[in-house]
Length: 137
Image (cartoon, rainbow, N blue to C red):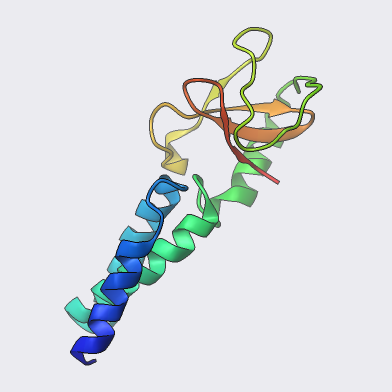
């Protein structure tokens, strides 16, 4: 691998929007760097980290592989759905009362402070301010 490719991979990693879905980005970068390092040493780790960061960001807070498993987890618990008149979308702030919020199990490796609930039969992750940060479809 030449220096231009290495610099391009580094530029991609730095250009990713860090604020958007940061948890998925970090987990994706960690996994990509690990896999790349195993396959091709230090240079593979750099490139794998950049690619993993991009795909981790797409996956959201939970990560793309955890979403179906988490949805099943919530469904199996038969959590009561909160009836909400507004839009169930990222950025929507839910009320502090009348909604039951639950801790996300540790095995999903979600950053502390995020909880889940079910709104209009759709599982969602919320931050400390009850703002929806991810809708699990």
